[in-house]
Amino acid sequence: MSNSQPNSKQPRKVFEDIFAFPPNRDTMGGTAYLIQATEGNENILVDCPAWDQTNQDFLQEQGGVRWLFLTHRGGKGRVREIQQKFGCEVLIQEQEAYLLPGIELTQFQQEFQINPQCHTIWTSGHSPGSACLYCDRHGGILFTGRHLLPNQQGEPVPLRIAKTFHWPRQIQSIQRIMDRFTPETLSYICPGANTGFLRGKRAIDQAYQRLAQLDLATHLQAKPLL
Image (tube, rainbow, N blue to C red; front, side, top):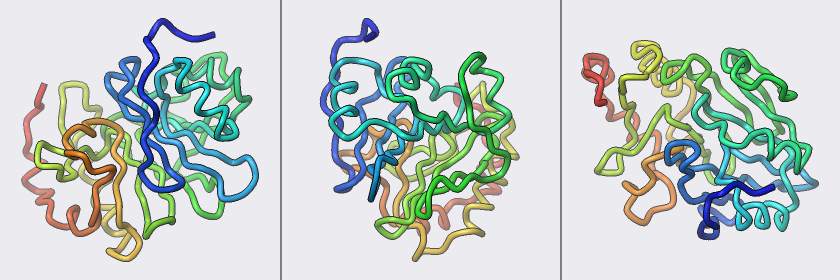
């Protein structure tokens, strides 16, 4: 069953095996992604795209969805409908699970290994259970949800808003990402919103180097934007 949204544009290719969906008004303009399986039916959907016929047909043509990973509580969209159609496992950090009663969930605490190439990382701050997904393809890609977003210059930054759960914790989570990766293992960021600021680019390149330029001490003093 489709929702009342008009059919959206076709998803755009970010890499040959990764697609970005148009912003979804159900998730406040969030961008969802499909990571195609390298073998078998193991496609990963990162957050929920608009549940219209265009996106349903696209997902069906790509072989369906094996995993639906939610980066934060705002990315849940039409979880129930997606799970019912594709029979996928819904993966979410345990502190957000209560928001999806009656849905069969796979919960994790710190990390979850989806397959040999992809795993989740708990990055609390934007919301209690905010999490990122790391994929080691293409030099390393981090799907950040709203943990890190492009600013108007297209640079990845943390954005403090009125609804931010815990700002110091969000800054600490960024530092842990920096400690964990290197320029060789983190080449791209695929953000979960604000993709219009990428100005035609499909992802944020030189991801580690750009994060290394962040002055986290200054960001820690930031006031809420909204």
